[in-house]
Amino acid sequence: MTREITVGPVSDFPDGQLVAIKTDGESVIVVRTGETVCVAANKCPHLGLSLTKGPGGLTYEDGVVQCAWHNSRFEVCTGTNKDWVTGIAGKNTPVWSRKLIGLGRKPADLTTYPARVADGAVVITVD
Image (cartoon, rainbow, N blue to C red; front, top):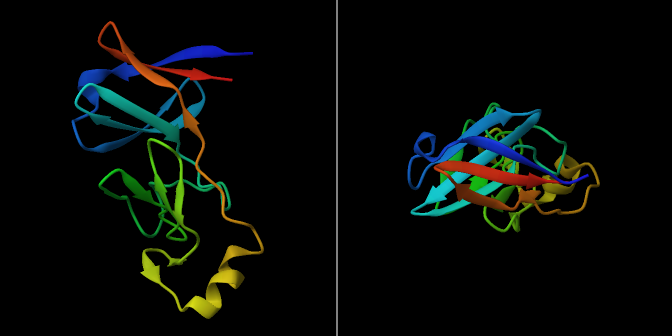
């Protein structure tokens, strides 16, 4: 069943920054660039852990968020995986150890949600 969720007023999301928020049972990350908003699940597809809370802390730059646990990087607007499990807690690890850290899971993209601004608020569509 498809439903729309109001994430919050657009003013809660500073231009060019990533904000993590929990709304209506969904933990999401929101990025606003001008009038464009992008929303993705705040859950790394590697182990389902938070992208923003963990030993590596929040890392976001140029539209890309890095998992706070295993350093996987994702484009927030498209969900595209850029790097898969390159380290632990913000520290890079040798290439030979990455398959071990990956626990046999194949690279996967981040879940994204259609988002729009309506009446001054960010609204997402969730299936």
